[in-house]
Amino acid sequence: MAEPIDFYFDFSSPYGYFMSEKIDGIAAGVGRKVRWHPILLGVVYAVSEGKPLTDVPLKGDYAVRDIARSARFHGVDFAMPSPFPVATQAAARAFYWLHEQDCTLARRFAHAVYRAYFKLGRDISSPEVVVDIAESLGADGAALAAALKSDPLKARLKAACNEAIAKGVFGSPFVIIDGEPFWGVDRLPQIERWLDGGAF
Amino acid sequence: MAEPIDFYFDFSSPYGYFMSEKIDGIAAGVGRKVRWHPILLGVVYAVSEGKPLTDVPLKGDYAVRDIARSARFHGVDFAMPSPFPVATQAAARAFYWLHEQDCTLARRFAHAVYRAYFKLGRDISSPEVVVDIAESLGADGAALAAALKSDPLKARLKAACNEAIAKGVFGSPFVIIDGEPFWGVDRLPQIERWLDGGAF
View 1 (cartoon, each protein chain N blue to C red):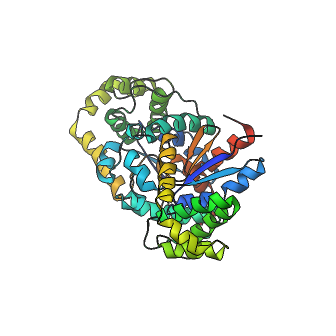
View 2 (spheres, rainbow over the protein chains, first blue to last red):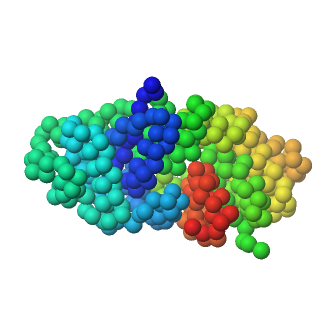
View 3 (tube, rainbow over the protein chains, first blue to last red):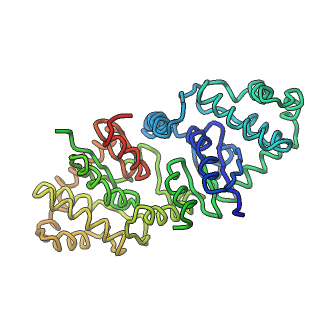
C-alpha cells in the first residue's frame, strides 16, 4: 500500500482552493489517499521571504487575472473575495480540532471553508463563521468555540506549520508524493504523470 | 490574420529556455507567429521586487529540483549550468542587433544561446562567447563585437526592457496573446487552450 500524499495549503490561497477540488480525485484514481495539512502562509513566508501575490507590483495585477482564469481553466466555481487575503488561524485550528475526532468530517469542513470563502465570499477569518460552518456539518459548535481559544490547539497549528517548513514547504498549495515536492496547482500535470507512471 | 504572439524571456531563465523550445511550434499549429523579446530580469525585478529563484530560502532548493524535473516533463535536453544565473546583456543586445538584419538569423541565434547555456554550460555572459555563437551561424563577428559596445544597441535593450515592464511583464517566460498575459512555462496548457479555442 503506497503512502498517502501530503497536501499543504492555506485557507486563504486561491490556488490551494483549486487544488483542494482536484487532489483527492486524482489520488483516488491511482488508489492513494491524501493527508490534508492546513498551514499559515504568514508563518511560512517569514522563512521563505514570501508575501501575498496581490501585494507585489505588476505581479499583483497579473495574479488577480490569472487566478480567475485558472478557476475557469480547472472548471472550479470561483468569485474573488474581498477582503483578500484574510487570516486563517481559526479555520486551520478548527480543522485540526475536528480531525482529532473524525477525519472525514474535517475533510468536509475544509471543503466547506474553502467554498465559503472563494464561492460565497464569507469572512472565514471570523471564528463565529468558522464555528457556524462546522456546526452546519454536525460538529459541536460550543465545544469548538471554546477549543479555538485554547493553548493546545494553538500549539497544534504552530507545530503543523513548523513541520511543513521542515519538509521544505514554502507556498500553497504544496504537494509531496513519496518525498517529491510539487508547488502550485500548475504542477497538476506533473503530479498526474508522477502518480500514473512513477518518477520521471 | 491574427497578431503575432509576444514572448518575453531572459537568456538566463531555465523556464524561458523550456518555453523557447515549445512556443513557436504551438503557435505555428494555429497559424500564428511569435515575436521574441529578450529582456533583463534584473531590470524587471527592480520594479516587481523579484529575485533569482535559487536565492530564496526553501524555494531555492525546490527550484533546482523543479527545473530539472520540468525539463524532463517537457522533454527538453537540459543540464543545470554553473554559475547560475548569469548576466545576459551581451546575448540580448546581440539578438536585437541581429534582428535588425535578419529576423530568422536572430531566432536561430536565440535558440543557440539558450542551448549553449542550458545544454552545454557555456558562459553566455561573455561577449566573446556570444560573438562566437553568432559567427558560427554566419554573422559578422567583428561588426557584432563592435556593436555590443555601442550606445545605440545598449539603448535598444533598455527600451525593450521598459516596453516589457509597460506591458506588465515581471518574469520569464512571459507570453502575451491578444492582450492576455501568461507567466511561466507551466501556463502552456492554458496557452494551448486559449489558442485552440479562444478566450475562456
